[in-house]
Amino acid sequence: MSLKNRYSKLLFSSLLFLTPLKSIAAPCCGAGFTIPSIITSEDKAQIATSYSYAKIHTEVFANGDWRQRQEKDATETYKIEGAHIFNDRYQFGISMPYQKRTREGAQSGSSAGLGDISLQLGYEYLPDWDYNPWRPKGIGYLSLITPTGRSIYESKDGSGLDSRGRGFWGLGAGNVFTKKWGNWDANSNIEGHYSFPKTVSNSTTKGTVKPSYGGSASIGGGHNWNKLRIGALISWFYEAPTDVIGTTSSEGSLKRYASGSALLSYMLPENQSIVMSYSDQTIFGSPLNASLTKSVTLFYQKRWAR
Figure 1 (cartoon, rainbow, N blue to C red):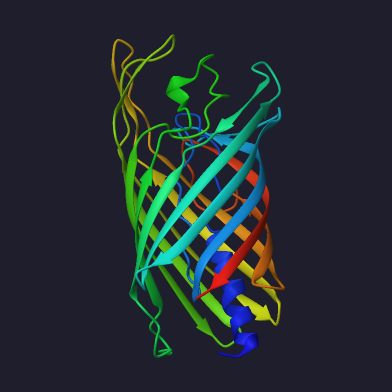
Figure 2: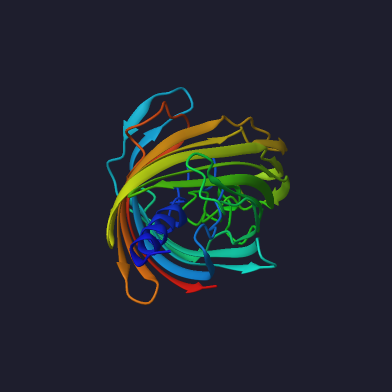
């Protein structure tokens, strides 16, 4: 493989690695299900750190009404992610986010702590050994989400400011597809997940919180100029209603939204790369029951060749 083609593959996988930009909590529920970090290049291991600043711009309620947020409500996310190939085509990954939330207005304050940690097991079931002009590389994966981030139903003050995750055990499965034609590339991801019920007892919620199924899909692409890459990505997210059964029973509402992202990648020496991105959840789709954000992310990654 030529040095130029190797740079292109590494830059492309940097975009795909950044695909799961973290969403902010909606009015009814915690943050979205985490899409895993997956090695899509020919490397054996990768580790990355990222910083993201997201600010709620608009709230969309369950009836479809939009209201622009006047006061500041922002989340800073520091994340460490890694993945490693074992047994030829299998891989294991982990993602650990730390979040700081700041809010102004009537329910002002700040809160910081660990978000939901996710573990992944992937398998490259569709390798691209013969560089087929049309068939993509395909990687399937399973995800386990641990409730290390507090859910909105477990908020100590009822404001949800200290909510830093969905707060439920969750299982997911999905597929990542990648393809490259010369200096152009494309990628897509589709996943589904299920979150398990949880008993909660505090001043605001008493009973069993019952989340359900959800999923996401994304498609993106870009163009490479030697060490530089410009790309774009659009993602759709869906969560079924979350109900509460108990002394404070309530029926939830489905959540959906879409996010559009523009990304700029640059390849550094020794298999390192840096990515800057801007994401906007107010442009695409017909969102419901969601707090729509605009965010910027700075992402650094290091890889080790096989």
